Length: 247
Image (cartoon, rainbow, N blue to C red; front, side, top):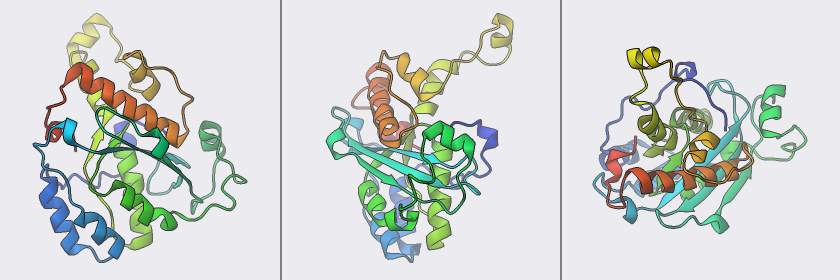
């Protein structure tokens, strides 16, 4: 998983969507031309007032060749299903992907995926159907939603000439709200306080969660899932409506 400042992201494909994901998915099903996308949208979305304890989630993470979703590509995918009470790590899925752009040295240093690692890996297009099947009807968890959403959006768009969008909960955005809402503007300047780190490992440390080796897609997905459970336990409740958290 890479990290970037919000202004570094060159596109936000979902600014046009509302919080009514049930209606959005219905409309997208009607307009979808690809059978894989149509089947995905047909699974729909839960109602915004559904309690977190009633929802099936999937934690999702990508490793990529860089930070620009328009010019970089996905090199690995990690998926972990969970509920609020249980992470199903035995059902985790991991895919290596051969991107349509060259790996660069800086990204290899981060995630350790080299040209030889992905030499025989298939293109993302082969994984679109199993990926959509794994996500269908679920609420997806990510840590840093803008980049994860944009990489998938552009990766699918470049192959199917149609995009895929769906509801996500961003554990980074949640943590920003918990830790930084009172540390902005004149008060932060007056007290000379720095903003708390929102990196996944640092967020986890605030909940006394164990450290994991970063930048492995499945491990980061599990780490995101555990962080979400801890965030809900501390700041929300099992009956919190999902519509308060997703985007």
